[in-house]
Length: 381
Ligand SMILES: [Fe+2]
Image (cartoon, rainbow, N blue to C red):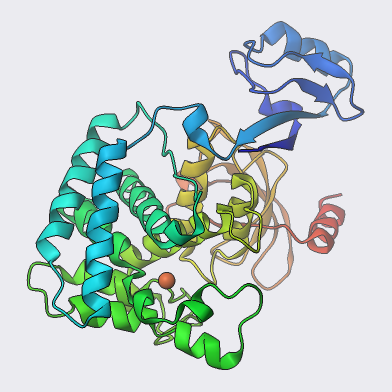
């Protein structure tokens, strides 16, 4: 699998003594400053500060196929087993037979146990689609892995994590009833074809809705995994208050894996590009706090810089806009923000807000629109 070289712009305040960067460090002008994988020293920070260097960058190779770097999260045997179970369920749905839910429960139990054993020792090592016929299976397993991991990070109970896993593994089973000519059609779909595809959450939901051993959590995940926070999703177009947080977790993981996967008609995005996409959709597709936590956790996991760097312009849940001026740790979700504008666009006079001390405010999203950033910069002067 090809490596993607990504450039990360940072400010001098990003560097802390003891920090180890995975790529060589350069000044903004491209002058080499410090080698990769060598702990940054206070002496070095003082030196470049004395030279007046404020903006720097480093480059990092992001491997998409992490199996070359990290031990796998799941053994090949368990993955094969999961494939068989999913194949069986899809065959049963295709033939309008009752699905054998016990098999699904057992494989989720095994995946859960293996995940708990390896937590902290293995990264989320997503499988790469090598054979396009396997896409639905590989994608479903990746979404299950990511969703269970992220639910664990959010503090969900073991029962809930397993139900999220069940919903995630089954989220796309309804696709078995969609003609493959539509499902694997390269390029744009027509209105009619889209209408057909958009039925798959309902087909999947009907396959499990009468199963007494499957909880409402898992059933709602299958039905609502394409619904959006703002109500502009499908099949029902319901908003977050009806969707709930668990289908949103699976929805995030579904989009993340779909964006980073290679398909016959498109190249996969890099992890940082996919996280940027999710950031842009925070507050529309996704519940903002869940989206921000996902982005932060994935950045940490894959060794990417936090999206909340010092100097980043942000929009708060209150509608206020500001710039991050300090954070206590690299992946802090509650940095200190200098407020620039209030919710009705009135300029604020340099109020520093430590989000750790404010339980009502949080970052809704990073402001990425260049015009808006330029406008806020002018207000800061
Ligand atoms: Fe889907």
